Every structure is written in structure tokens, then in C-alpha cells.
Amino acid sequence: MMKRVLVLAAVGVLATACGSGSTEDSANVAASLSTSPTSTTPAPTTAVSPEQALYSEYSSALTAAGIDFRPGSDGTMYWDKLTCEELRSGELDPYDFATRYGVYRPTDANEGRRSILMVPILCPDQQPIVDQAIAGDVRETTFRGGKRLIGNGLELSPLGGYYLSPGTYQTEKPVTDCYWERSDANGNIIDNNFVTLAPSVTVTIAPTDSGFTSKGCGIWKLVE
Image 1: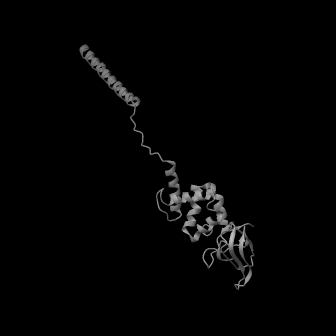
Image 2: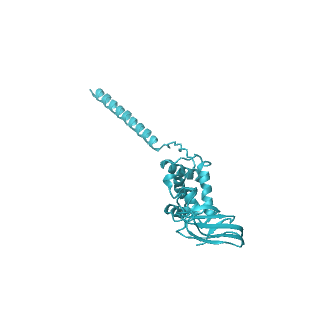
Image 3: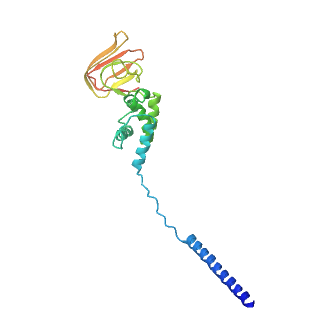
């Protein structure tokens, strides 16, 4: 009977020892998994240049507005950037920007609508000119000879081009054999002159005038 008790006790001790080892091994494995370094591969990044970012902003704005343009930084955006340079240099004055580019009536011209959108993106420093053009706060400062109807200088004339605004104009350079005349609504001459030779000629066109004609006088410049 004593032998049987001793054998059973030995078996219990052995089972306990085996169980303890198994638990310890599991704990060691778990600790190893929690502390082992995790291998991660960084996601590849693509650098975007300032020019690419600018084109993305430009193309997104025009696309959202439904404005046609030639894609690529060497497409329509290239020419719009040149327009910005002309605005900065003064080569393109506010009046020409308003009329030639259709900014004053943007709903009538795709180019005008595009110009309004592109300036804040490509040359935000020129925004005041856009604001002037949209408001119609611009005037034609120079014009060549020929026949012009008098009226709102931002409205299209039936003769082609735009009406000539009333004002005082002076020839830009000395003149030889320069003829000019102001006329009324019936085509009658209000005033005229033929200048054989002069350092300059000055003419005031009244709001009540209907037409102005000049030949051989060169370029006229608005003085007031």
C-alpha cells in the first residue's frame, strides 16, 4: 500500500513539472513575438515640382469652369503666362486686356472667361487690372487714324472694332499732311483741318459728336 502511494505522488510531481515547462515556453514565445522588430517598407513618394503644382491648379480651375484649353504646361498655359508678362511690362494695357481678350463681357468669349480665371493663378499681382476690366473702368489711350464712330469705348462698333470715347487727343509724333474732321449724326462736318506740318495736333472730341476721321496723322494719344 505504501509503494502505491509513493508511485502516485511521483507521477503527480512529474505532471506538474511538465505542465510548468509548457507554460514557460509559451510565455517565452509570446515575449519574443512582442519584442522582435517589425520589418516595414516605406511607401514610395513622388515629388511634385512647383511647375507641376501650378499646372494642376490651372487645369483644374479651367476644367471645373468648362473652359476649353490645350493641355500641358506648353499648351494654353504657356500663352497665358506670356499674357501675364505683357500685363506686367505694360505692353498690354487695361483697355486692350478688357476688349481684345473679351474680359469686359466674359460670357461672350471663352478667352475672356479663361483670362479672368488664369490671372489669380499665374499672375495674382495683376488682379487689379482684371478688376478694372470687369468693371469697365478702362479707356482707350491710343488709336490709329481712319474712321471711328463716337460712343462707349467698350461697345463694338458697326464699322468694326470699338467705338471711340469722347476726349482730348493729341498726335504722338510730329505730323505732315495730316487731315482730321469731326462730324455729327448726319455726317455733316462740325470741325476739320488739314495740317501741312506741325510738331503735334490736338483735337477735342465732344460727347455729342458722332464720328471722327483722320488720315496721315499717325497715332493719336488721349491727353484728358
